[in-house]
Image (cartoon, rainbow, N blue to C red; front, side, top):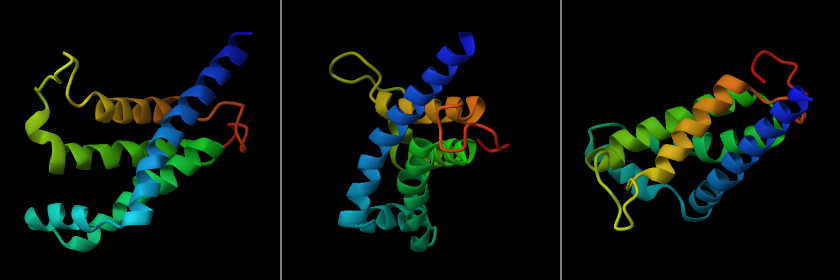
Length: 135
């Protein structure tokens, strides 16, 4: 019974993170990553690095939703969020929102949920059945 509950919890976490993050990726597929290129080049980095956002916001969510290479998907989300914190949100790390919560609670959720998925893996309710080393 415990294993079933654990696997169901992993499924809910994977789906929540994957679906919510995929909306950001779809937006970037539709509207491009030009604004991200601007941020990256303003830090002296090559603009082509902006295309890495597709790994963290399109590929990773699909892996999480399906439960294939799930730990890799979690790692991609964590890397994506560390870069987002560094390039975009660093000055907001200590800020509170007008409602009293952390100004970066959504980004924090993505970062720490990705870390949890990376550590927990897919569980049985996945395409891979949680059998692979990266699942």
